[in-house]
Image 1 (cartoon, helix red, strand yellow):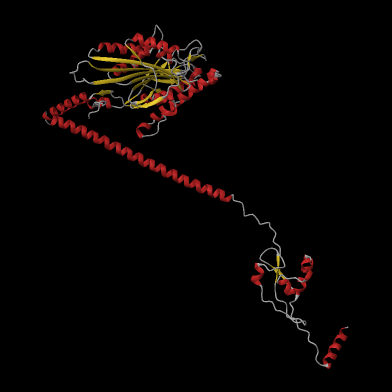
Image 2 (tube, helix red, strand yellow):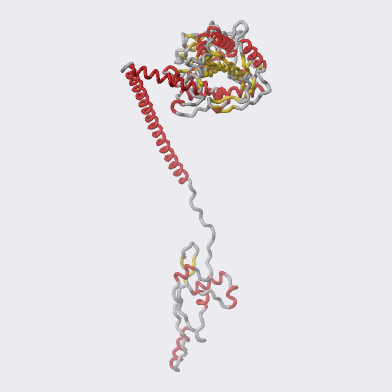
Length: 551
């Protein structure tokens, strides 16, 4: 392993690789003059429950109880909250861990007051900056380089608060996660310099008046990067550079348009804020369900806010979330939304490790030290081997358990796919039967079929040989034969349909054809007896007598 940018395996101990949950706390602000109401919630240790509006007691009809890591009542100061939630993270950041603190909540719930505070009561951000510089100055064995940046997300556009001319900055994907391209970073050497940059950035932040006179209309993210290395080149950490970051996020409050009465540009700002907070809630919900462990899709790219916060939610960061809420009765529904968000976020698991960049010499030195430690364990006897065997068996057990879980998940997935396929086939069959039942009957052919004097295909198939009759004049064809063959005498083509039908009634026979229309059968005429001239006088006399009797 000779890469200049490599992570030291000796630092990846069991403590560093341990998965840990996000720390989630709730701060309940005091009632202000505009509320003029009593508390709608009761705080009981690390839990908070709603009260019934009728008797001001715990609502027994609903089993609604939110249990979190910490619940801070109105009597808690910001400094005490900092000591409980953030102070340890600042120590971890100086030692090489990425850390982040997020303030979430509805509008006018005290998020900005918690993060920034006032001149007399500083917030978490100035307290964390002061604490970081105090720890850095106390460590004389390492040298540090600190740089800071300050940005806002306004209407889904990223703007630089330290350089107002840098607007609509793009997000790029780097080796360590997403980053904002073109963001200004200032190198700082004192906490006063950082606080002055914060005041400059706050002056450039978008604010507006709704139901809060100084309502923040954008999300802001303060980012402080700390790089350090050992001063003594002969120490074990020589050649290794620790790169860590502290991110403090002040999210804009969710807006309910019916209560704020926002219009125009304020309405557009509120819609943009609510959209990004909805994307954040979806990401937190997916992570809380374990989508990261099962390989499910997590919609980080639905918003620029969630894409920037990706390392803080399910990544290589120690994260703390402080949810601010108001105890007033008129904001009870918004407080329920905030507490549900906090409850889901509590299930998110991060994997934070020390961020260390090693040179080739440092990697070689670490490996030599590790080999020496292994030799010492081997020389000590079976004790070291026994520990190694226990570790190997533990790893094998974990691997087997993960494989079993994977097989169970795969079997469930296949079963769901089979059920979906079965449902799809049933739906197709139902659809086909439905449309077949609605098919129209075949349309009747309304075209009228008529007969003609000529031969048709049907008549020719049923035609019998016609008997030719000879006439006295030497065997000419009869008129019936001429009509059957489609040849008419002289002006026969000018005869009307009625005349032809009358002649056919005398000479032929009509029958039903293969169609509703009647067709004339070309049946042979009965053979006519030829009139022969009497040969003798007696015969002539007999014929004359017969004719006289008829008369």
